[in-house]
Structure formats: C-alpha cells, structure tokens
Figure 1 (cartoon, rainbow, N blue to C red):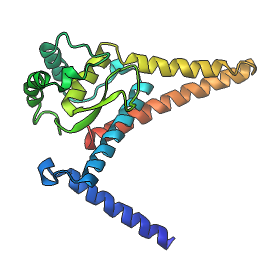
Figure 2 (cartoon, rainbow, N blue to C red):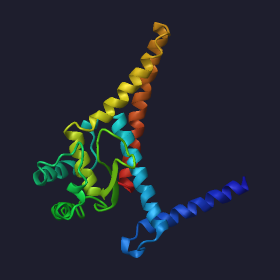
Figure 3 (cartoon, rainbow, N blue to C red):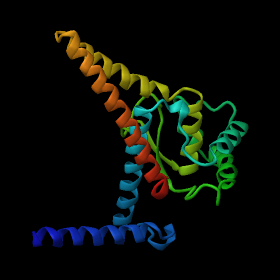
Figure 4 (tube, rainbow, N blue to C red):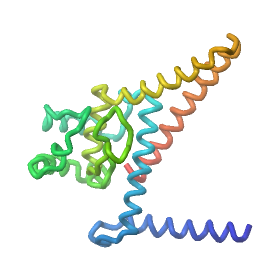
Length: 211
C-alpha cells in the first residue's frame, strides 16, 4: 500500500508538472518532445470525448461553446461554399487558405478560450479519428467546422450509424422470448440515457480544461 501511495504521488506530481507546462505559451518550451507529446495526448483526449458525445447524442442539438451562434454565423459568412462533410486539407492548410482563415480566427481571440490551441479535426465527418482521417487545426477552426457539421446535419451519420449497429446487434439475439426482449429494450433505454448524461458530463468537464 505504501508503494502504491508513492506511485500515486509520483504520477500526481508528473501531471501537475505537465499541466503547468501546458499553461505556458508555446515559445516558452520550443520543440521539447516531452511537451509536444503532452499536447498531442491532450488533443487526443479531447477528440475521444467529442466523438463519444456525437455518438451518444443527436449532434443537431449540441452546444459546444457559449458563442456557438456567433461562430456559426461568422463561419458561414466567410466560408459560404466550403464543403464540410469531407474536408480538403488544402482548404485549411494552403497559404491562400491560411490568409483567409487568419482574420476569422483572430476575431475570437479573447472570446473563445485558447482559440488557437492545437486540436484534432476529422476530414470525413462520417468516420472516426483515424490517422488517415485526422489533421491538426486551431481550436476555433475545429469549433467552426464541427458546429456547422452539427447544425447542418452532417455529423448525424455518426450518431445514426452507432444506433443502427446497436439495434442490429440487439435483433441478432432474437431467439429470446418476448419478455426477455422487453427487458433488454428497457435496459438499453436506461443505458442510452446514462450514456448521454455521461457524455455531457465529460464534454462539459473538457470545456473547462481542453475545449
């Protein structure tokens, strides 16, 4: 037990050190590989929480920030024809694209916390966070695109895909009696509600630290 306590204290101390380092401006640590890894881990944690959320709750009703309306309005005013279901990296990363995105992003400096923090963004919104389907983007760019995907119905493919899979798996157990199926549906409904609550709780916690 004493050894476990010592390990916990060590891990806790490491986490505090990492948290302190992540709170510093980028120029304070240059290209330190340990800090870069910490940033990457934090971005991945954020991605996992977000994907869990849009898998558990109808994305059309999600609110990611306190200024979703402003972000969406400004985004579609500046990028009316940008295709967001399947992103072209050139529309985000090319020099001409960066010139167009820069003034948009800067509008939210001081409005969205850590607006330029590195965040993982999916290219194809019907798929998950795989290596091939993911790029790094500033947080405000992530919010702009994901809020638009939610409001315009593109992210619903993830939510319905998970629901269809769950229903298919449930129907494959059709050899059970009606009473058993009824109990399964009741349990599934309870689990679904619990999963939604947990997802909301996690994304709200993440908003305070990583979003």
